[in-house]
Length: 305
Image 1 (cartoon, rainbow, N blue to C red):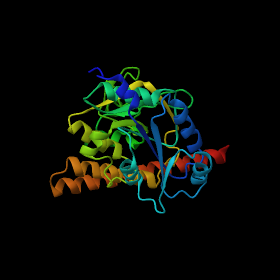
Image 2 (cartoon, rainbow, N blue to C red):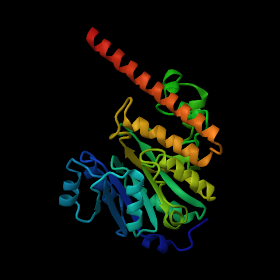
Image 3 (tube, one colour):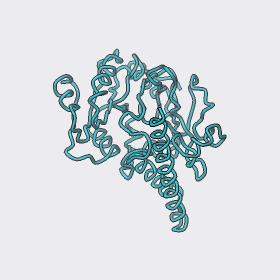
Image 4 (tube, rainbow, N blue to C red):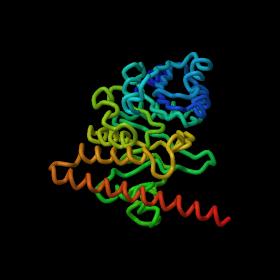
């Protein structure tokens, strides 16, 4: 559907929301890239700091006077921080951006234009790239009881990297040069319409870290709106810069998030809930075991060298 009044799009405010936690190594270049990406002046940047103990806040105060900063004295989670920022934002288009990203020129305006031209699109996501120029697989199918055990960092995908379940779940054969509908996308660089967020809500705060983007896309699709991948909007992303490899608290949060997602959207009986809980425990056990074995073999290899 073509936009009725292009001047309207030019005047619409875009809100860019960035949630930080110990992001001093990334936040400066991220905000500079956002500012330089815009040709328009009608935008705002809101940063919510989740109780960082590094120089993130100092950088924001001293170098970016135009940024609206919200500081928390306690980390209440990624979902809560984004929701607070949304409530204080003014834009008709809401951009959710990770601090470990670099936005290329015009990308955010292309995303806004896509939303403007299509009434049935609820969310649009950018093409994510690594800093060596390689592609990040940012689109996925919705998880089900089988493919949840074959995700990006799962033990089974590490053991059987070419298995068809992982390939299908990770959409490894997706044409990332084509504009298309997807189930869900990583929330590192996405944009939504304000009126949709006011209708269905932004992030569910039961998700402290991870899977909140899956849940949001699920609700968007349930509301009859499309989730669209836009290859013309390119954002470079460090991907996991603040998350440790191997077994960590992040792994626990991710599995808790998956449990909450299934419990919220699919579980109907106490028996199913118990089985899912046991499955998540087993999954965490194998993640821990696999990570431990990796460390042992790495240690032995270094000793031999």
